[in-house]
Length: 341
Image (cartoon, rainbow, N blue to C red; front, side, top):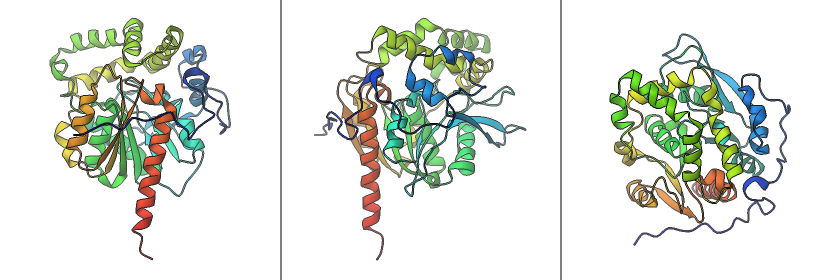
């Protein structure tokens, strides 16, 4: 019988507090000012980790076939370079790299070369000249970022819908992905389903509802466990920042009516070793999906985090960072064992 391995209290980062009382970064960015392209509402965010990571967001040009102009693409670049292949962090549906505000610094402090990349159509990239935001465009955009800047096989980390992005990317560009980490993965949804058939006017109305603060606050309550109301308010504001760009609505509608991600048929094509991480109390995607994914992916290990909802990298960053580091260290040791003398 398949059983989960529970993740005990972390010891890798013993000085790290939980929730909003986490330690200060020991790796400092050069400038503590927010980039001018971020929405001015960033100044109202209270979370010190979101504020700190936001100072490091920058835009890099990415040349793609579906746009005459380079797309100024938002990401957080590593401050350190490592001999080990980099970790690249994606985010979930309609979110941004600020999802990684707690886990990103822990990975860097552990010595990992870490990137956080915004998926095309979400995050803080400049889409003033709106381009296509369907699956193929998102894939090509990410590939061009990888080819131009990252340039090495990566450990690709995808939470929620970001897991579908990671699976799709690895199957189409296996040379770019060394390993996978999938967190509370949304990989069995049939794209955007019937939403893809909506007339554009109806799709616009639905996306406008998606932007509403009450709905986003409710999703935070549903996705997390044991988070205070004041923290939920701040998390909702952080997760809504990118929605303030004038192009957000059209980009999201474009993705919705394109059909979205449908990767269930690609899962058995994933050849990279994969770590599956799941929150024990996920109320959005059942941990039965984790068992199914573990059975269908050919080369996986699975770890469950107790007392945790749908956002382990936000709720339990210590545990997630430790699991990612151990996963990468184990793979590195195994590679070293097969190197000929």
